[in-house]
Image (cartoon, rainbow, N blue to C red):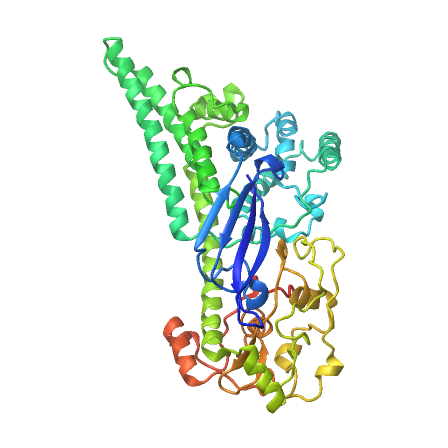
Length: 550
């Protein structure tokens, strides 16, 4: 299931009445293809905070929970979607597990990989464009894929590891095998291109699930799988009692097979835990469907997923009988479960460090600035000569700094460029470079906003990848310790998300005044004194930056 998320915010306006701004984003699940329209879920969230367009805060890091959250979906499509999702995941797990036991002397490798090649292709395909895996540079399919969907990133990680196991096999690398695989690849690529199964509306980054959300999903897994395995034990005990016999070796064998199927289900559920492309309701459906295969086949109804039944049958064989049965699998999944948990834990630690740095710098910003109403601004313009526009983006306060039409959703930053609306006025180095300490400072100029039109557009005109910001209008804010006024969105990005130079601290773009000691001490209380000792803070937030590769 994929999600279309619409978020509504309460933003300040020129007349003092809150405006209702909204943004839209698309969240894809980790399945091979974007879901058909009938399978999508629709989420509507309402916040009492400013929208990202007005505040400058990245949309993937909401500063508060929504005070109202509504979900909608076509429940008649639940079974169809669950079958599609589990089918793709089961095929992937079959390929991963078979690769673990792949022998370099396996004479059936070409035949087996021919059967598994569609899985390798679909797991590594680019969902946005018809890119080959070796030539895809889309961010949502690269090293930062976990920022879009951690489960999709994990599936690609396991697929890459499985594919690497075949590289040393002489048969797989033979010219005959290459011709076979190339033909399969061309057919699959033509099928995907012909069916137009690519998502062109933009994929949005999403925050990692909170510990609370992960624990809630994990508790659901433990409850459902625990009940399923208890049912197996109860059925075995009833079977032994019905025959008037004690527990036999046959019952032990059936229990051991169920235990192996339980490990399989736990691993598949571990991948689904971090899939942010469907709601908790859909997650429960997936876990319940997977848990069916734990029970003994002759005492349960089918799951309805051919690939899952095949995989469950394969893992039921003891390791000594697996290869004889032709499956090449059958061992426990504890190692894969550990690898999945290690993958997600590592990504969560990276994200946690980023959010810690971001939260600390946002705290400095919040304590160093104050909002300016339009009445105050007009008085300052009249009496003190304050400019009517933000000196960073040269757009009037309360107005969106791009053309009036809504910018289209864009692909991930490194994907192929698409037409986008141009900003109303570019930030010019000639205009801003009046002196080293006036107008836009070196702190801002070092970001090369005036060197790259696409960077300017992302900063001042368009949205982050996958986000459609329907409204915006940055509010003027005053830096408390020096009194200079800037647009909130521009100043926030300058001090927080784009402030990734370890040798510089946040400072006023006009006079270079830094926050007072009281604010610094507050930050030290949040991070500890060792984190802020010296001339530089070293608190990068590059994952949240819109200036990629600068």
